[in-house]
Image (cartoon, rainbow, N blue to C red; front, side, top):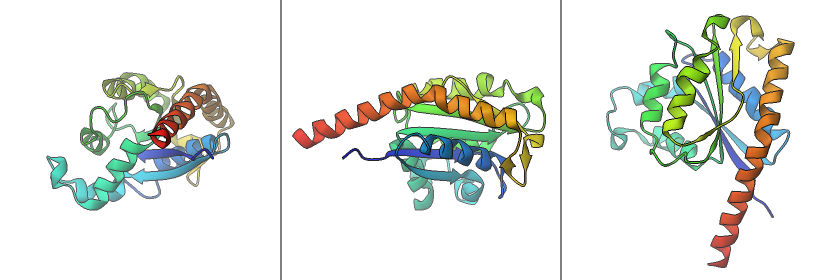
Length: 193
């Protein structure tokens, strides 16, 4: 039997509820509609007090370490962050500074962001894509950018955005299938050893 893929979404939103978290959950649900998976949402706003002041990973408390390990062990990563001053949040970057530099090699990463206006839509390609290129991750072809007007009560309500999110996941499925094949091959190798 094939194990479910582990999808971990990281929301850089600092508040709860958060539009970034809502977008991340929406994207995870779309993936879960297509493939057997386990979902986990990491909300950085909830971890902020435990991340503050840490310079080394060894200084982090166990709850933060668990979330870092979940991202490192994920088969698929979804990231969504609010745009602050033209980039991802500082807390988002601080969290990923603790991720081992080889942990995301070849992992599919779906990029998403939220902002007050369309002016920041290119942040996905100018900020997020280079960050995950450093990790040698497979950034998925389409990013998803949402503005405040795309939400109603922290739920996606704009038809064009919902369609783009669905298209982003559909375009990602071939790379996700490669991930499933690779994880199945690894499991078979471990069983044979």
